[in-house]
Length: 110
Image (cartoon, rainbow, N blue to C red):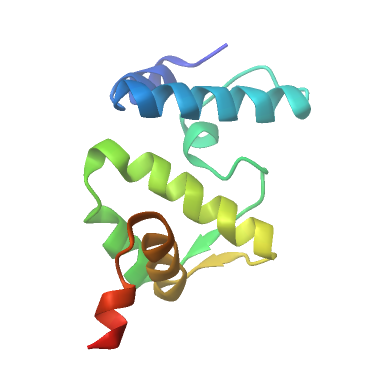
């Protein structure tokens, strides 16, 4: 079951992205015997871990286009958790951006 605010946020994502997010979130909740998708659970790391954000990293996330911001947040938090980190840094953001979009690496070469 999805709360109204979580469903509203999901519906605002591009259709291809919404379907991926829906599948990931529902699979994670089933694995943890959870039944309700809340707004916070939708945007939080899928592992249930608590992740902190550096203030500059939060400011940069605000600059990400709204259509992909939720997915970017999920991927950044998932990457941090997989590494055993509990904090999102600007360096991690740059690394993930370079991996997915081929950006950031050229910036470092200047």
